[in-house]
Image (tube, rainbow, N blue to C red):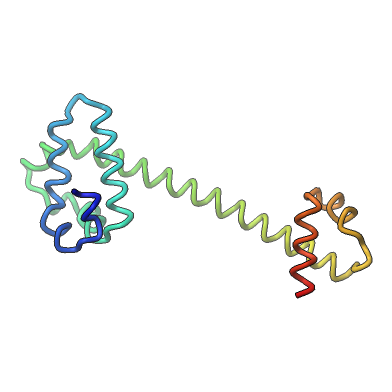
Amino acid sequence: MALKASKDVVYMEQHWKEILIFAKDFKGDSTLLRMNHVTVAYLSRVSPEFNEKINNINNLLTTEETSVVELNHLVRGWEEAQRTGFKQGEEVGIEKGINIGVEKAVARYIKKVPEADDATIAQLFELPIQIVTEIRAGLNK
C-alpha cells in the first residue's frame, strides 16, 4: 500500500510512521530489512512529504518508536543509498560532460576544416564514424 499511495500527500502524512515501524517484524531477517530499505528509498524519491519526515526523524519519533524502528540501521541504509545515488549521478554527469565536450570539439573541427571527411575526423578523435556523421548532419540543419 505504501508504494501505491506514495504520491498521496494525505496518506503519507497520516501513515509514514507505520511504514517505518512495521519493520520491527523484520529483526534478524536481512532480506525483509533490505525490502524495507528499498521501500523507504523509493518513497523518499517520489514523496516529498515522506522525505521531509525522514530528514527530521529524530524530532518526530518517540523514544519507544525509535527503538522499534532500529533507527540506526535505517539511517545507515538511508545514508548509504544517498551516497550511492550521488556517486552514480556524478559519474553519469561526468560522462555526459565529456561527451558534450567531444561533440563540441568535433563540431568546431568540422567548421574549421569542412573538407575533412568523416572517416579522418573519426580516426583523429577516436570516435565511431557514425557519431561524426551525426554531428556533421546536425551542423547542416
